[in-house]
Image (tube, rainbow, N blue to C red; front, side, top):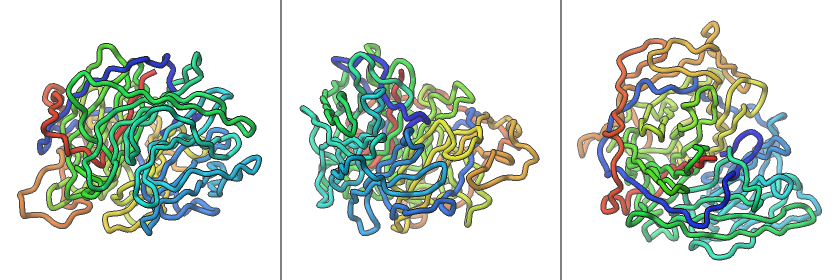
Length: 517
């Protein structure tokens, strides 16, 4: 997930050694939910019928990024509806909303082997490199990969990174790098982080942590990319196993943190029925590491993703991530129908609090005006809208596989308008005459979010329905009709890491890598 100018790098000098400490919340049914968390006015917008050109196929677990040179969204790889990893690259011009396939300079047609569930990030180092990094993934034959590639935005071609050392091959790892920090100007390097992942369908997910430092030049005439892996050490006994994760990045100024939520024990068991609701925050890059474990609140999901709150209307947004989409087992959990209504769960990693938010829908879209629950959507956060001059930041969502197993080629945007609301607030400053607008040029008029007033709850064993998205009702409170709040007590939602309870609990997880400048 990348900011509008495409920067995706680390400002501080590379650490010769990073010490990591972790904490973890053992599985519980739910904790309290915050109904007074300050959030931007949110709205789902369906772009699917507003794009043209040679669009990508329906895909799950593709890699996505922002090309600041051409003002385009770049999509690579992913798993097709036939279950086969792909190797195609697509570009969406944000000015014309037209899909095309890049035309490489100097006839450099080398491309990475087909893959899905790769780790990715943004490599912006002045005139030396400006591209999209892809690490590992799952190959066509189901085997894990450990190669590293970079797509050059300037010249629209792929080049392999020559690496030394490194972790074992894997797919579905957590990590990435922070789009809001500048590169290391002394070493001309950017750092990327990798945690966990899957090495096979039959074994438990992995629990190691690594840093990759990339240097060199990437241009049409010079391709001298180098990567050096360094394993990061823990101050406690071990790291929870994590895999199948989506990644996001946040600038938090002094430390870096990997945030994970949900998951299963193995790749072969990654269904809604095995999802766990546990979350943890792994902090790296400081001699005084402090780590917290947010309690459970959203329904345990598989295939969800974490996106950054890139909006700057409030300083409190800098420590927030959005938990989006995924699927859960409604025979085990009851979420009040939230996920079917486009629920966005807001986690503040500073306080450990969760807020469950229902954004406004897109009135111009067919159906509910929100994306259906889905696994493996490609998600990318920006510091600007993807089109027009609206005062907002957009999170782009492409594809995924819904609860019925249907692969999707939909393009959605979660738009965060430049304002703030709380459960006790009325309408935000851009509410206007109250008539909700939709489509790409929606300005925020009429947007009115709703706070759900309880966490997801575990149902009695043997009751409920089939797995997928949830059903039944909840007690919402909208920003237009305030009600009593129930902010969580931080001490109640932060727990120490217990390795014995989580070795098999975080396989396909939603993950954000929180990287301070």
